Length: 165
Image (cartoon, rainbow, N blue to C red; front, side):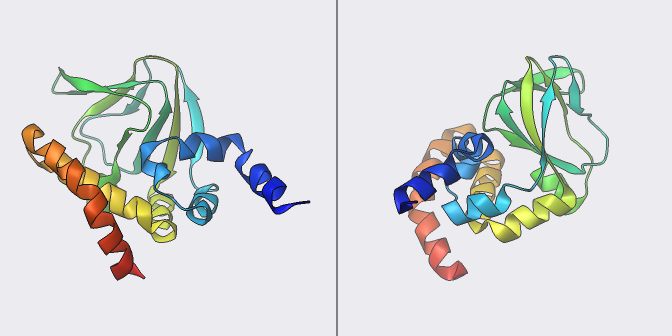
């Protein structure tokens, strides 16, 4: 079997192909992506299902692979997230309570990672850890400053990669 054929077969896995299309995983090297393939559980969820409930302990990291979810807190709609969006990363680290309820608005495919799986993800895929840090920073700053933060991300990532080696 030629090298090209072996490479194609590795990427023929629909799970790896789907994950690679998501912003969170798009920064992964092939090796990182393959090491993360066994982490988490993909779940098909019907519209109207509550994935995360406000005020409950945060114990899972959820990535929307297909479909959409709505965020609400205190009975007030906060917005909608689509494919590639994720919730729960900060709560896994600080073991806090969920600040919002996350409900599917359409049939949705999600990737759910337990606390242990999420910590393994950070260890096995440093590029995802960097992407999560940038996303956390973006969520913490004013919307007007988010564009500037996105512009800076490519400049920061190579420096962080060098230091991490």
